[in-house]
Image (tube, rainbow, N blue to C red):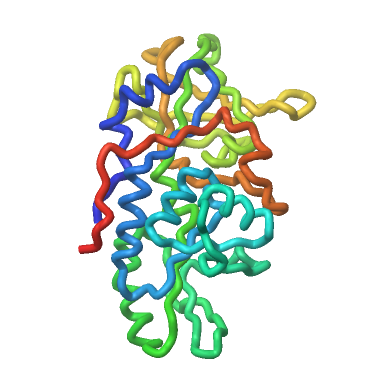
Length: 279
């Protein structure tokens, strides 16, 4: 399996070109999605591969999952209609509906009667860590189907947040980045400063010191801002990047689709090369 989590190293110039103003932008990488889905589909012990639609409902990621053969885990009709609009020609057999979709196990075991049970194993790592565990499950349940749900943990490396520094707050050694609820949720923002990795594309620092950030709201709690405590080397106009934000909260409990949101904040970076042949 290829580690494509640092894909933005090679596509630095393209990302800088996309960042035309100070409005934060999420960029998804088709090459990383291709590698992810290729690895999943190469795991022959899995009988059905599901894509959790709410984890990232961007039309580009949905089409990639559809084209490569994943089915879709949905929790309501709005999610199904959103997938159908994004993937022309998709049939009803490509959907699996359950009202408990958001709590559906990552690994589930379906017996001959169609009943499910959650895997007895606990999965906290990446796909490499799943291989041996899934083989053990297969040996223990030879007459059942093994289903795998691709969700936030797997999709996160496929996206980065980029933003151009609009102004420096020298007295606090930091600057403000405007965020909506959606973007703040992707990087786990909360009211307590925490450490995270942030990279400067302008200076391309590959080994940055962890920076601190905190969430701030205006009095009406309409606008959410992130204050990043940055070193003096980061200046106005620099492009900053936060990795690992490819998983989304774009669909709420009512299945809100992208068509109902402000899409200024998302881009889909097309692949330069792909391999879709199972080894």
